[in-house]
Length: 208
Image (cartoon, rainbow, N blue to C red; front, side, top):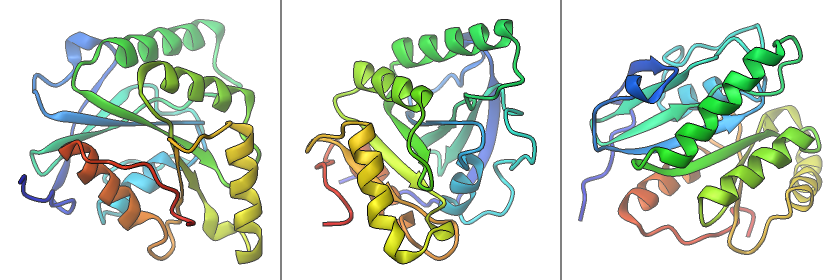
């Protein structure tokens, strides 16, 4: 049995814009994708009990590189560039698409790409497109609904149902509500990463 990952032992390792710049390592990778303002950096910091390891920008779309975080020398958490930033040029959008396609299709160390969506809103067309990309390259879709701390408790279930219906989640998929306030979702995501690393993940819905 593999030892548990110490998620407090984490460091930023490198940024990349092409496969020649990816880490030269066989460690398993878990990637996080989502819109530019969905809160990926905040979620990563929450998972790792750090305030600013992943840089949180006040300017959506600032992250245009693939960022690799070394977690306890056991796995990489990979922050993918955010999409949906309206001020990007057509050339930048095309470059983003090419970079994402190459990483998702050809990175053999990649175990799972996890989609982040804002729990307050219905997933966008781009969210749906990213979900389709993930389904193409992975057996199941894992979705983290961020910013649930900005919802009233009675609203959360309704919003999760909307996300599940819009993304057409099946019984093989996973939907996890996540808040950077308190511990909602943190233990679930860490458990998922541990189980996927061991090849033992059984799909479930945290609400059940």
